[in-house]
Image (cartoon, rainbow over all chains, first blue to last red):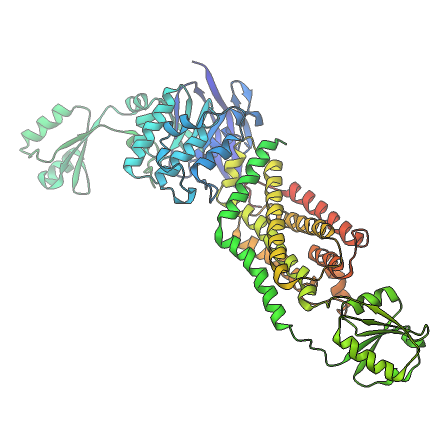
Length: 293
Length: 334
């Protein structure tokens, strides 16, 4: 598959802080690429250098093998993390304003349907709910029918329902063969949407691959949880099981053997649950601190 | 420069302004209230003595010059002195050497002073002039409109650009093919259109009630208003070219507007002010806007007569615009 964007030896430093520290990666056409990491990991800086909004201190970003320049703005769509819209304009007028900036644009009817804007088309930008705003911002990112869509934490601050709706919109965009580049600190979002993820921390790449690959690579165990009062302390000490918030956490590679052991020790299995590791756990394992710190 | 992009931003900014009722209302009501208030406060004549203009006072001799409760003002030029008489600034004009006097037909005071003058002097040639009285409200009108324009230009451009920068509207626009030049010129022309439109509405509306004094041409007045507004808008742009902080910009805009409000001759003439103040005032665009407009209104000056003010306004606009464009930044805070 063709490479759309290639990032080589990218570094960005501000005075005494190194936000992005010599990273390299490439993104394939039609993929949804997830840039993951905690707040302050360097995700936004990386994505904004790729968009041409800020300049790299070192290194280069290539778009179809050519260094990025201003002409790229006609071919990409961007949804920033924090953007206000011009006050006192309606959604429809905002679409019109942005349409006038581009040579080639998507018909409004198509955008309105794709991003589900019809019910608040004549509403003032100031009166939109969080989910509605994000949908409008997404429509603005798509207005020039871009090859690549950059979405910087598009679902941060949305309620679970609105997040799920937004995921569906992103899936619709993927279905149109667009390359989507997404930053997020929600691992479930990445697991749902991304074909390819890159995990960053402190400006450096700490893991790269498909979500499934990464989990397979780093975990062959599962987690078993049981209420703490059902297990004698001596047993916990013997097998070195940890207790977190009234729950005993048993990490095992063989679920059947562990359950057989518990039954042999006369431990009640009421309230037992088994969890496969997810990207959150992977992140914890790789960085030693929680994602949402 | 892509004209359709420029026009789209121009239009969007105009819509934003006219839909913001509170700011629109303020821009309209404030100057009207000021004018009504001032004309009410200064409605009395306030002058206890009569004023007589004398051509070449030092060389004039007459017992009339001994009259009590009358002040005598020296003029060297008949043309200037007759304008003062027409505007009711003086009540009578006498040239003792040429044995002529001028009287204003429309002024009651002029009639009275003529009676006193004739009781002492006869066989002088009588010349009649006519002219509407120039009131304080006529004199202060260019100042009030100019001041209102100044606030609207400085805050309407400076504050709005900083707000756009702070909440990333500018950043979003930068991510489109829109250029800084297109964006900035659309902001400038939108504000110019708004300011000239609103000032015209206020002027025309108030003229129905006040019947303002006007000796010059309305076209010249419009040109001076456009040049003045443009220089103030470019000053607003320069002040807002880099900052991201609304507090800082509020301070900077106040720092630029208050000296103009006090020292640009909005409320009172700077003629008697200390020289240092006059020199300082020369560097303020509002000074030249108000002075130019006032000369057109009260003295019937043409653009050629006020070419000094016109060229200074053009020079200031060029300098502010060049510096503003040079320093302009979409999103930095330095």
